[in-house]
Length: 467
Image (cartoon, rainbow, N blue to C red; front, side):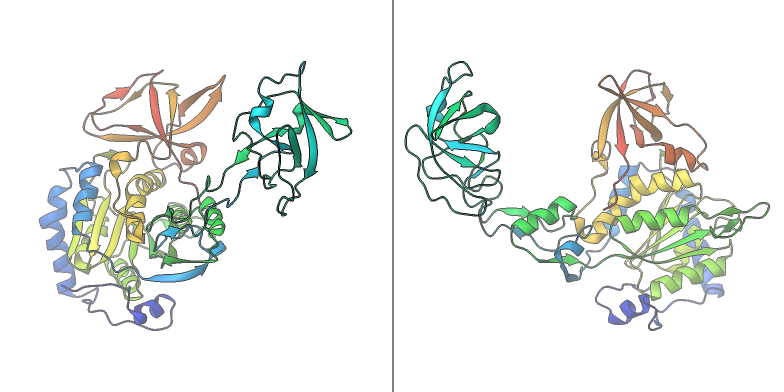
């Protein structure tokens, strides 16, 4: 029908900030054409396939196959502001780090072979010939049987190839040193280029920057980094019963849990969350909300609730009415999260998540987050590795049933006892947010498994840490 996209579109970018209105060619929400297209497209594709559930891996592969290569824009940001952003170009070391050998201890620099055989009972004796202050070049060179005082970070003087800790020495007076321990060449020393070598590719393009990455960039003399612009994301919570968190819910109402939690998750991944809105189960209202988000330049739209096949579940119809290809996947062989929708309107990704909080957040973690990383510039997702990436091995505290042909993600608390890590399932309905709070991650029960017995070793996918 048409193509939507904000990247490289200054008008859409300004609209995202509320400065201008866009004029994307949408059919009016209440028009007969809009409604008929949504219903027909959904019935022909999504509804018929809902009960033919795709595996998570197959669904992601199908979805990625339809995504067009994005022309990601870049911006230059200050080093300390780049954490959580995706690197747009390789980071290359300009010098060796360190450039010269340095001591890693407070003690004495010396030649390692002069200490061989030394013990507390029969120490090796050295002549102290000077000291190397931190931040200064050595002014002495060591000969056989000579030592030099050093501190952590001091450069090694010529002739030295190791350092001995001060705890293993004793100054005897008259510039004599007794060394009661032998050391090997290179012991307690960082060698030139041991951390980084000039010309090394330290970080590749597409890498999401962590605090330690900021540190290594600083070691390379970098003060600004080229990163991809943030993904613009709009979050919509749907349902007649949903009210804002600041409102006291009346009978039959519930405060919006999914919206704030999803916004926080997206912000922690470096996304620009433009707006969180709450929409009733009304076709026109939901259509207009999504259309307006796309006109303002949203790269991604998240819809929470209304993704199943009930009379009030309008999400799949609205996605298909907004534009081709519409609903790409509807229904996954996972628990929780069966009614998940992966949609595409032009080049705008649209995710329909279940309304129950635990389901929505689990699906975000194991389905949406890898796709968000790819859209942000981090490369193609590898869903088959989810059970090992950011995971720990733990011993299961109780047996868990499952169904072959379905992946289960069970909330779990990690407990360490006597050196063993145990996984304690936090069982409960998918509408309960408290089970997510009590859990440290998700036990992954693979597709082919019929369950896991108590005492088995399981993979627990830990919650993604915010940056």
